[in-house]
Length: 332
Image (cartoon, rainbow, N blue to C red):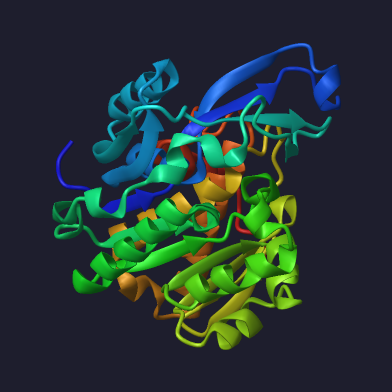
């Protein structure tokens, strides 16, 4: 696999997608389990695009964990940072789908959110050696909900600072992951997320997350509020995104595609963005024209991901993205 240029820290799991669209949890007749988890999606997306990536997270010593580990290795993701937990199960998430392909998390079945292996990510077992050759660290906020994984995020940030990695945070707030007594008040969740947001270089939020945390979807205003970040994205599904990168602000309306499943679209967008930074270097953020090209590429990766079922399975290769961009003119 070689040394990863990008490290992705967090959860890998099975998304159990409802086979029947437009139904409630009790009405679904069957489910299809597909590998997922935002950081794992990003790692696989990067590898498919041609940028080496490693995944760091904890899975159970169970059949599901074995399958996910084998899957990541088959995809070409570096798994030196994968930990195993002896007793906690590998996480499975049940995902409902609307008639238009939008998804809604429906919980974790028989387990409480605190019982899964990913909550036990051990800070002391994070390999320092992975950070030495790497250039970027990608992480989300779900690990903040649990003591062990929260400590692991803190250690990863220290290592990223020590070895000069740029850090991208995808807020990726999912209420079911925080549904345990310590976080009974939703307002208590905001401070740790906002605190983490101020320690990174790039922040990606959905429209709903931006309104929840900042009361605005203006990416420039959010960047100003955070102070030290180099870039902010606010994504809004088929409506595209707004961005503020190195003080270059703008919007991109996205690409019209026939949506099958929106799972993983945001993760694909992140993979596309980081891939462009790896390919072109930070200099690609120096002019508004080049910034728009980077956003266009990331948007194309996200759009293509919605045209197939599942998160990782639908992530496109670089040649597919390039072919898509050749046939879709940029929308101004």
